[in-house]
Length: 136
Length: 136
DNA sequence: ATGAATGCAAACTCTTTGCACATTG
DNA sequence: CAATGTGCAAAGAGTTTGCATTCAT
Image (tube, rainbow over all chains, first blue to last red; front, side, top):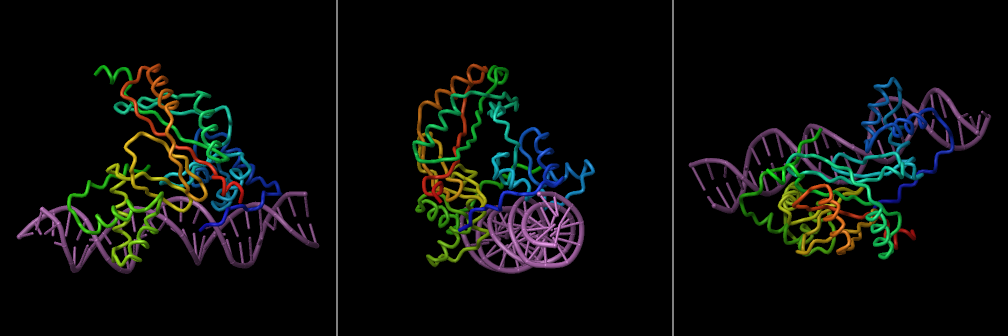
């Protein structure tokens, strides 16, 4: 079993922490710690990779960032509650539409809490054939 | 960038592959490759860990297994429901609930067709902390 | 026979950690 | 000045891969 990760909520303000938050904030969508580290270094911010990991984990803990995990690792995204959306992707040509609809959000929230779950997040993607590809 | 993993769909029947499928089938909920390997060895099935990894990846590819990933790694579960359903998974302990609800299905259908898409499918998973883990 | 699957161990990737040093409050 | 954060490099954990061997077909 693994212990709950809970490194104490940072109590000092360092430029590193602020740089990470800022870089994350400026990034659209999800990024991994490594990608963000690369981004920072490319912007001439000399910062340790471990620090980026620590900062991101911390931001996520504080609820300032969402996380998502896939084979490439943990991905972080700055939480702007407005931008939660889903994708409708064409199986054939890859065209993508962004879907935003409070209906699902509420549904997810409701269903989850009915099962006693808290701190909910969800992934939802739609796949189909877009108009053009449907015709073809 | 990472390539889409697609090791050719197994063409031979080995007892190892069958053992993995069977062990997975008998297991309730999600298991990791390592856990399953341990289970197999405890049942006096001498089998390589790599083989378990390969077999599971393959089962998932074939649609015989669902996968879910958290900090402890990739978790596999035998697909037993024919019906379309979704999962509500505990981020911490991996507990899983199956969700079936026509609401989302209809929503997906409606939204997609509004965008001109046809032949719709979708993936939807909810993540949160189950009652026990919320308490902890 | 013949090439795909296995097993083992080494290699990899992502992430965490120990510790000396720098910084913040 | 005291404690906390950083940086680095080493350690961990999980997963993948190279290659010789075994085995299904």
